[in-house]
Structure formats: C-alpha cells, structure tokens
Length: 243
Image (cartoon, rainbow, N blue to C red):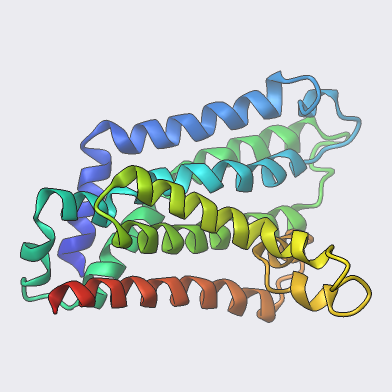
C-alpha cells in the first residue's frame, strides 16, 4: 500500500494537479471570506467562520471528483490497470493507497485555512471572542465529509475509463448524498411521517450536527460507514477486472 500511496502522492505534487486544486480552493474561499460583500467576514458584526463551513461542501462537490476522476479511469485508459492489478499488492492496498493519497492532498488544501481562524480570532472584540469548540467540530466534520466524497470519487473512477464520465458520476453522487435526502424528506409522502428518518440518511444532516461543536459517535460512525461502503464497492469493481 505504501508504494501505491507514494506513487499517487508524487503524481499529485510533481505535476500541476495538486497545486491547482489547492490554489483553486484557497482562492475561492479567500474571495468569499474577504472580498464578496455579502459573505465577507469584515462586514459581519460578530466573529464567525460560518461562511467557510457553509460554502466548502459546495466546492468539494466539484473539486474532489476533479481530484479522484483520474485515479482509475486514467489507468484503464492507458492500459496500465492490468499491470497494476497483477503486481504483488492486494486490491485493497491499491484502493487504500490511492484513497489516502487523495486525503493527504485535501488535508494540505484545508491546512492554510487555519489562517482564517487566526484572522477571525484577532478581529474579535475582545480578541479570541469566538466559539473555538464549534470551529474545531466543523473542521473535523469537513475533513470527514472530504473523506466520504473522496471514496465516492474513487468508486466513480473505477466504473469508467473516461475521466469526464467519472467526474460527472462522482459529482452527482456527492450532490445526491449531501442534499438529495433532505429534498426527498420534503416530499408529501414523507412530511410529518418519516421525514426525520429520511434526512438522517443524508451527509448534510450529520455534517451540520458535527458543525455545532458536538462530536457525536453516531455522526462519526456514519461518515466512516459511507467511506467504507464506497471503498468496498471500488474494491469489488477493481476485482471484477481481474476476472
């Protein structure tokens, strides 16, 4: 697994891919946090990082599929997937190696946003007048969200040798799992009956729960379950190619 991880991480950071992903995320978040008047924290009367954690999932819906779309699709397109699966590594090691390499890239994208926390911390009156516990919970939730989206992206990439198709499928699945169940819960068939239960199937429900600063084991288990489910589906898709 380590060799796959190092290969993927090196491919991210030895080319423009990693830097474009990190730069795009930080530029968009910087504009939203400090430039656009409707969302700029400089126009707020209280210290908050709410804009970051509200907008980041929307960006991740497209950004993470763009990162993962090449993971297996490029291997299939170039014909190296057969060589990869015949090496002395298990399918699980291949999947996890690619997954953790993507997570490292996403961690590097999130790390500079700590500067936003420092800025808001200093702008508070008095300095430090903000809910650090909720912010820490939001960061944990955002990283878990990124992990779920990365697993979904890997699965979509394993389904096709076309990177554009992999991107579209991954973006759709991320969108549906994040907002889809909330929309379904508003249908007349569910309202007032099982709408709360339907919402609990969506990522948005658990992400918002963690963002309030309350780290609930049920939310943690949910995110790990979603990531594990799609990683296992990716493994099944990869093992199918061996046959």
